[in-house]
Length: 306
Ligand SMILES: Nc1ncnc2c1ncn2[C@@H]1O[C@H](COP(=O)(O)OP(=O)(O)O)[C@@H](O)[C@H]1O
Ligand SMILES: [Mg+2]
Image (cartoon, rainbow, N blue to C red; front, side):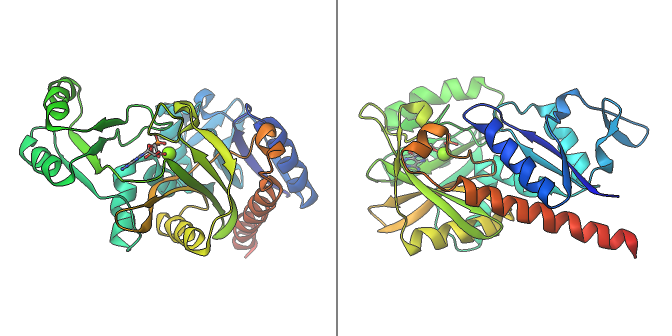
């Protein structure tokens, strides 16, 4: 029987066209794709995960690539599915990269430079205050956010004092804060697939914001990385066990070194507009993903025929 994989891919920003290309290239290798496989509509019963009549767990692999439309339910089933069939990314890597604290912690453990951080209990204002004194400026981050949403720059003890009662009203158990890194308001986004460098671009914060995210008004520009940036990204992706990763890097002007801000497990392909600007890594990225799917599904077939 031929190989068949399930795919759930974002459709906006040119995602639909990328999906088409990927499906075509997979077909050339004898791999059929079931697209639009949104686990949001799946149910689990009798030891299987059903999407309509299809048993999703009978597929050879599940490719999950839709950060924007992800729900808790979808993630819950993704976890169950990953125990039975290969997924890209693996659920472990996916879950890890969804959480900034867990990621920074692991990266630091492996000697990858990140911004200095502290995680403390919500009632532990003593440690927060101490850090405020030491760092002068810090950033409060929701550990599971993206697009710069919820990030709060704390520039003085007064701001912290003002913020704490608000944070205490939320049901958060802990606070994750980072030292505010002095940098030039630009970053590197380095894409990695299967341990290989795919491409790089930069983002620059708008004049009105300190965050480089496009959703915070930042703009994308073509940017060549140096070896240091590439190697840092490759190492970060490896430590996270992420088959696919988009690593965000900034240059810390005080420490005089590059630091990893976060690892994204579902980094967007270049949009058609960005491709026009010269971000030309989409083809390579598709090819590397197709290679990866091919390899991961081959192994399984071999096992079965033994
Ligand atoms: N510790 C920091 N110091 C200075 N700027 C930061 C720091 N952390 C994040 N930023 C800025 O905020 C942006 C968003 O932070 P990031 O950790 O990547 O979260 P998100 O998942 O929301 O993109 C970064 O691209 C960077 O411009
Ligand atoms: Mg980011």
